[in-house]
Structure formats: C-alpha cells, structure tokens
Length: 511
Image (cartoon, rainbow, N blue to C red):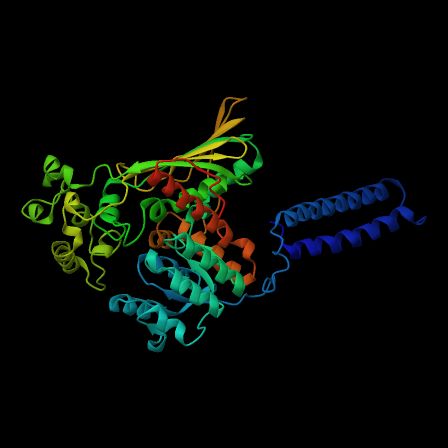
C-alpha cells in the first residue's frame, strides 16, 4: 500500500516540478541547445513519475473500506491507543485470543478476567499481571461494577454466550464472541439487537474468513479469474480422535447440554460458504445425517482394543490404543487435547502425566465411546441452492485422518479453485489448461504465537482484525460482524430443521 505520507510528498513534489517545468518551457531566457533540451526532458520524466505514483495511491485508497481514512484514531506516524480487554471465560479459546496481548502489547492489554475455575483465574492473573480486584469468579460479578475495559472477549461455554454478550453490549463494550453466537436463534437475535441498540461492534469468531490461504482464495474468486461461481464442495474432516474426544466424551457430546454438531462445529463452514457466494441469496436448504457409529450397537462388535474404556487399557502399552491419544504425545505440557482432560498448571514432566492419567481414570474421558451419553450426529451433509441456480454442499464427518483441515473445491465457469489444507491454493484455468499454485503473503505472527493460537494463523488474524477495528473505530475491518454472523446462524438452524423434519426448507434466509 502507498503510505499517505508518501502520497503527500509526491503531490508536493509533483506540484513543484510542474511549476518549474512550466517556467522552463515558458521562459525566453531558458537554456537552448542540447543541455537545455536534456534538462527539460529530465524534468518532464520526473513529473510523469510523480503523477504515476499519485495515480497508484488513488487506486489503493479507492479500494479501502469507506470508514478507513475517516477513522478517528487512525493517525499515521502517531501511536494508537492500546485496547484494554475483559476476558470472560478463560478456557482454551479465551486464552488463545488473550495471547495476542503477549505478542502485541502495543495493541491489546488484558486488564480483567472471569472464570468459574480457580486454576483458570490463577493462570490469567499470573500470565497477564492482573490485580486481584480485577479477577472474578463469574461474568455477573465482572459486569456488576460497570465497564472495566474497551472490549470484552466472551469465550464461555456455547450455551452461556447470550448472558454476558448482552450485558457487555449494554455497558458499551465492543465484543469478540466465540462461535456460535448462541445455541438458539432467538438468543442470536437478542445479541444482535443489543449490539445495534448500544452501537457497539461485535465480531463472531468465524475464523475461516481470516485464515490467510482462505483470504487468498477469496481474492482469486473476487478477481473473476474462474468466472461465475457455479458450485462449492466443502468438507470438514473432524478427525477420528478429535470427534471421540470432543463430541462423544467431551463438552459437545449432548445437544441438551451444548447444541447440535452442525452449529457447534460447522457454523463457520456455513459462514464460509456464504462468504464465497457473496451477493447471492440462499433459496433452498436440505440436510441429511445421523449418529451412525458412536453408539452402544457397536460396543461388543468393536471391543476395547479400538475405543474401549480406560480399565481395559491400563494393563497394556498405550501405544496403538485409544489411551495413547492422550499419553503418548504428552510431553508434560498441558496443551490440547490433554489440557481439556487435565487443566492443572505448573505440573511439568512426569508429574503432569501422572495427574493426567488420574483424570482419565476418574473423569468422562475414560469412558468407552460406545457407552457414553452422546447424541449428536457423527456425519452430516447439507445442500444449498442459491437464487442464480448455483449450489453448494457441506459435509461434516468424524471418520477422517485429517483433523479439521478443510477440503474446498470451487467450480467456476472459467476454472476451478482447490484448497486442501496447509498454505497452498491451486487455480486451474480451463482455457490454458494450466494450474497455478499460490501461497499467501500474510505471515505476521511469530512461530511461537502460531503454536499458541492454533488453527494456523486464523486465530491470530481474527483477534488482530478485531483489535484494529476497536483502535480505529472502524467496523468495516471486522469480516464477521453481527449481521453476517446472524445470517449464517439462521441458515445453520434451518439446515438442522431440514435434517430433523426430513424436508427441504424454502426461503431459509427469511427470519
């Protein structure tokens, strides 16, 4: 991007050069002969060069969001104010986003936190140097005394999103809200209305839009390189052990306690399809799926050597058994997935591993996957039709080697774009029959921060965009604002309605 200061300098130089050039060509006393001709030529070329630079800058500025230049805090050459944050829910996701304050202390400072768990509160206080009077045991206490920060990062369990989100909006917080917005459409609408009423920004963590290779893929689509988009095929491979861990034994196993899988796991996949199909309206949605495998029908057919209970596994070497998923990779550091099983901090090496094994024996993660109380789908497909006749298909499936590495194929009238995880985007042109492999240039977070955040760099760019939007007072920097997020949630709820009722839903975007 051409910096505005450079644009100003170029304009001044251009004006000065023009005056000089006009003076030279208009004066009767100007030099004649070869030296005079050369001087006039050099000045003319310099004038053209400055005009070209100004033209480039104007084209760049025209592509910026409408509020970018007007943002009240956006002053080039001066330091923008640090955004202060209240973290509500200091679990894995809350800590991920809070880590931005460690990498970008000039952008974000965590000044308060709340969590029902003592170990989580201690972690936040120690890591972010939060005083005791700014640590709370519940979100109600955190909001009771009024506004404490510029923004709130709400990462409570899915079914507890509406309460803190609405309360924070009423206090004037800008909000970063973990997906899903809420577990009912009515609660999603209430959050939207609270944000509109209080004129605060809301960013829902649909991280896929912010992922650099996905952003690059969208640039290719917007350029028209593959023509009109006709079909999108998208797969969310949850992963065999990830599904067993999170959706059979874990927090998202029961619809009554959390919600249905399409919402808890794939609402940002629906959001991505709408992002790809930008400018189109979905006219029909139909869905099929079930809890096909993880139920007691398979308990005796498969046996404990596959996904049995902890009692069957402790007498064996953990390698090659389900318990090895937790014990074999564990190096004594509490990271996912074992951090979910045992969140005890400051227990390095074998001591942590011993505590982890105790938690497996005593807790829900030691249960046989065929004898749990889970009831959510382990495979589901959703079909979308849009107003121009184009279509999209989304598949969520547990039984994959890949862990959440999306497989996306976008078919256009002139070519095809393929993304298979990682950092590469492949573009095939029908006319030339040539394949071009592209890689994103956005690589801003450090290697250590990428390990902390997870999801490649998608988490980083999600919080980065939100913080910059708050700093600059510019909601256009948020790709997943309140209206876009409500739209994708509406379609997700309609897709599940289709699956449950066994019918096609027409006009699914109508509230």
